[in-house]
Amino acid sequence: MYLIGKIKDIFDIQIFKNNFKKKSIILETEELYPQKILIDFIQDKIDLLNFIKIKDKVKIYINIRGKEWVNKEGITKYINSIQGWKIERYNEYNNKKI
Image 1: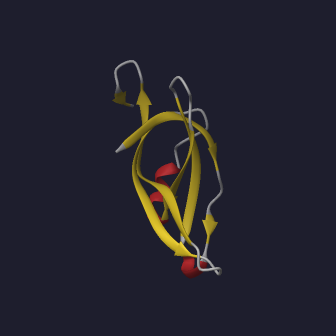
Image 2: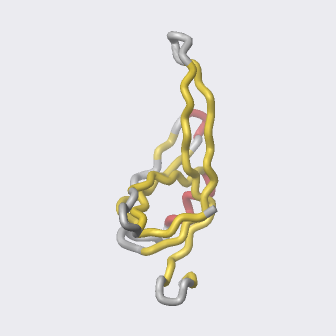
């Protein structure tokens, strides 16, 4: 699965317990009702963002992740996240990566 849009924002790397690393971006889709989607790149996939800048048009290959969590009150919650695993600059005129 993939998403195409422009990079709206790029956040700093976050480091969590056990040296887990994450870097997030905001992708703004280009459709009638544009969506601003938070996408996380984790661990070694963070390096894929080294040459990406705000306003770049990109194609991002993603996985959707979900997990179940029970809070202190015993209420079950569900958490979804979108993880990027490949990103390429995108040229809309010929629908090819550049």
